Each structure stands twice: as structure tokens, then as C-alpha cells.
Image 1 (cartoon, rainbow, N blue to C red):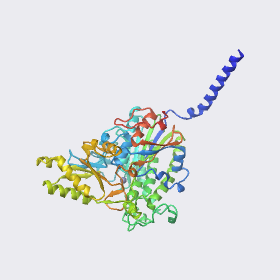
Image 2 (cartoon, rainbow, N blue to C red):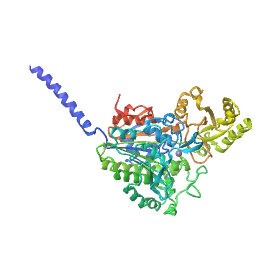
Image 3 (cartoon, rainbow, N blue to C red):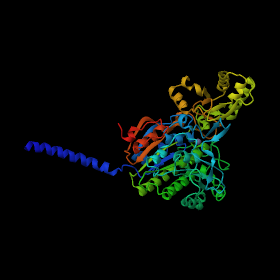
Image 4 (spheres, rainbow, N blue to C red):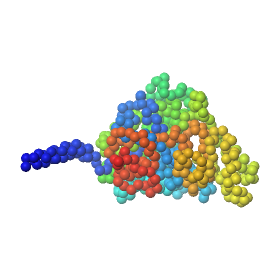
Length: 549
Ligand SMILES: [Zn+2]
């Protein structure tokens, strides 16, 4: 009897012990977060998380890596690695082959013209001093995770998109979005379209009336620290930097006072574009009382200025370093704001990017690395002239977009010209051009003699209705246009390796170096929230995040 009690006591004791050990963990995590904040930084390559860490604050990127879970090897699943494709992939868990957003724009064969990814002639702009054609997500063929959240709550969850670029707000916010807002450089207003509403909400009107951009302009743009301390970047004035906003040289300080009341577009190519986005995002949280209701809300916010700054001055410029030092500080403030408003652990936050970026060709060349510029005009001229001469076809190529050639097959067919013969000629012409690694027929990608990883990315990026007929692959580190500035769009790791860090609700600190995909983000969110994944999703939940083993 005594013995039995003893055993019983032991069992009881261990039960209590386990219960005590587990209770705080389970009790502190709500079944659903109050809000999900999905943040995308346009052109943020993975290494930027760490590159300037000596001067990052404790509360910004360092806090993310310390308190969050970092998927260190997150790669974009497809090529071309372009803004609209990236935003759509993150939110659909899918790729251009399925969701149809094959670029920021493409040649629409049925219409016989180039179209912008979110342009929609059936809607009008709302909130701009001068109206005009509006934008909508109608070209995205898949639902988004934000749509699925709306469906799962019978549309009681609110989903809102905010960004300077229209596409970076519209595509993440989803088809059934509560709202999407973007910045109109003409008048400095955040605007939307009749797709979402007929009139801006009062809080948005009040925000626009303040013209906060003018107050940022008052501070000009000087470096956050003395310029001599920017030792991780090149000298301020390099011949391979571009200029912006009418400046004579790409150097500090920038006189922004001159733009007060005059030029609201100039803010895009300064770090104040981030400040503006944070300010409007907070206004949207408060205006819609996001995270304050019974259902989980979703704020999808994207930062477009890092892309504009990176394209202009290149990743090794003081301008880019200063942008990230400032973004880090503002991120720290934003986390403090979220902690205060929702409580630590009650919001789920993730940060990622739509694509990375290459170094500037001029920078590579200066440092003895292989690079160069593929002059768009030269190579498109070479193809056009070459095909004209050989086949007597007046307009052989309808469009050059997203590293692809849209062929005027109708004209070739009329003359009874064999298509594969044309393809061989295109290859002959282009492979002679400097900096071009390969030219592949999109329809033949399945058997193309190229490494499986690249083939897979190209196939996932190819949409039979909207993509071109041939895809041109530049050599690594080569860039379209000239040697100045920097760009992205290829399969190469500098374009495809992006940060992905999760923090907050249900997230245990840690990291993985296992390869994860951009398309895994939406399925991971679906698994965490226990809602259906988007209609076109091909990614998989990231087990380290969802807790599955
Ligand atoms: Zn870009």
C-alpha cells in the first residue's frame, strides 16, 4: 500500500512538474495573433541583415536575429527576380507560371501592347488631386494568403496594403482586400482606386493634408554619422553611380529643401521614403484599428525606397549604407510601437524582400572581377536587324521585356518560315553579343541542357500566356543597360537570396541554413493560422516555424 502511494506520488509529482514547465508557454500564446505584419524591403539582399551590424541598433535588425527565427537560405523559386513577381510570390506561395505576374509589365498578346502588372482601365484613382486610370490586382490569377484570411473569417479580418509603389501594396493586400494604398509622387498623396473604395477614409485624408514629406525635406539628406566613418562603402563619388532628382553629382549632402511644395516624387530616392511608409502604416493601423478586433488582421507593408536608392547608386554606395542604418533605427522604433500597441507575442511579424541585387558592373570591374554591361539597344537592334535581313520580316520582335523576346510569329508564319530556324538564328546572333551566357526557347525549357536548378527556376517563371518566346540569360555579374548603377532580375544568388526572419507570436528564436523558398512563406502562414493556403500555392510550410517535425 505504502509502495503504491509512493509510485502514485511520483507520477503525480512528475505530472505537476511537466504541467508547471509547460503552462507558462502555452498560456502566453493566444490561439491566433491579433495582427500579422508582413514587411517587404524592395531589393534587400540577405547579407544586408548583417553587413552593417556594427552600427545597427539593438532594437532593429539585431533584435530580429536575436528574438526571431531566421531562414538564412531563403531563395526565390523562379526567374525573373523582379518586384511584382516577388510580392506576388510571397503572398500567393506561387510562381509566375501559375499566378501570371511575370514581370512589372509584359507584352499582352491579345491586346497587342505592353501592360503594367496592376494597371486596370476599368477603375479610377481615388485621392489624387488629379484623377486618372487606377490600379487593381486583377492580373494576379491566384488568391493570396490575405484573401484566405478574409475567407476564413467570413471577411471579418481586415487586410490592408501600404507601399510607395502601387504593385507593392496591391499585390500583397489581395483581391478581397479591405484596402490598398500607394504613393502618388505628383501631389504627395497616398491614393487608392475605385477597385477598393469611392473615397479615401477620413484618417487618410487628414494624413495627406499634413504633407509630411515637406517636413522631411526640411532636414535635407545628410549622412546619419560623419561621412568619413562609412568605411564599409566606396568613396562618395564614383563614376559608376547614377544620379537622381537632378543632382549634378552623386554626393552628400542632398539639398531637399529645394523640393518643398514642388517635387513630391523626389522622396522616393531618399531614406525618407521609408519614414513616410512607416508613418502611413501606423496611420492605417490606427485608422482601421487593425489588430483591435475579434479576428486576426493583416498589414502588408512594403518599402520601395531601398530599391530606388540601390538602383541609382549601387549596393556599395554610402547612400545604400545610410539607407540601411536609418531603416534599422526606424525598424527598432516600429517594433517598440507594435510591442506597445499589441503586446509582445500578440503580433506575428515577418520580413523578407522581393529580390536582391547585383553589385554595380563598374564596381566589379574596378576590383578586377568579371562584369560588363549588355546594352539593351545594341542587342535588341542586333536581333531585329539580323532577323529582318535574313527573313525579310518588317517587325520580327514585338517586345523585349523581362529578359525575353516576344516574337511576331504571325509575320513569320505568313511567309512560311520555320520557327526553329528562326530560333537558331536568334541564338547565333545573341551568343556573339558580349555578356550573354545563353538563349533558350521557353517552350523547350524542359529539355534544355542547363543545370537543373536554373531550369527549374526558369520553368517556374514561364507563363505560356504572358511570357516571351525566348529567354536571354546574362553572364553572372553582367547587367543590362550601362555599367552605372545596379540591377536585378536573373536567377543568380545575388538576385535570388533574400532575408526571411519571423518574430513574435509562436516564434521561438533560432535559425536554419536549410534552403527554404520564397513560395514557402504563404503556406507557412496558412499552417500557423490553420487556414487554407492560397489557390495557386506550390510552396510548403517551413517546419521550423510551424512546429511540425
Ligand atoms: Zn528594382
